[in-house]
Length: 248
Ligand SMILES: *[C@@H]1O[C@H](CO)[C@@H](O)[C@H](O)[C@H]1NC(C)=O
Image 1: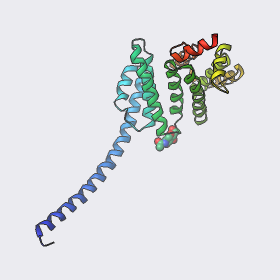
Image 2: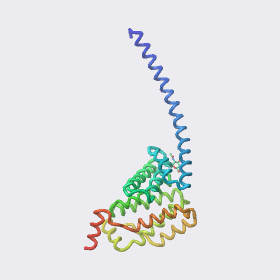
Image 3: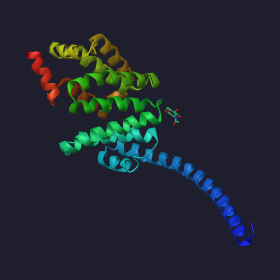
Image 4: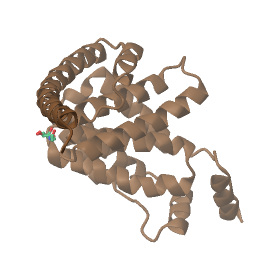
């Protein structure tokens, strides 16, 4: 206390830190406002690119914000990643990376906002995409999760014809599952996923009432998913083993 120099300095420091704190508060409030405005702008731009079919540009735009905490942005990034994965000029290695990346973004979108129907829908779609790279056991386990998320998406937005239509495809896929696939499923799970054509039809009719699913990209999406869900190529050792057991 005897040194007035020290006292003066500490007074100055505390004044500075007080000012610093104020400044920080002002800046961070401004940053929040700015960030919200910015997200809206990005989404607007993203939706324009999506409608124009600018798949790669859309991905490039949204990938810059992959650390975002915004569910609306993250599910769009998930969709864009899988759209790039679907392009014929995308290599097989890139495709695999993108498909898993898409799932990661969709998962984060869900974590950020569980009430966002689109996050549930794209999580379900992305999870079904990674099935191409997983063994049959994982694929069947994922089928339950996929269904849950489509159902949740429909609960949150009963007018979303895409989710309703994809739910119909889910039911159709498991209604027409050939006997040998059902045998595999029964070997692996106590109650394997199953459905009926009637159940599938209910969803298809409901989706048709919505009509919006007739948009070209949704039709393409559904068709891709349908062929994918139907073939169960033996990609992994696990698949092959299951098949060997089946034939023995
Ligand atoms: C979560 O999503 C719902 C539906 O889109 C929205 O109404 C709500 O404001 C969102 N919550 C947050 C925290 O962003």
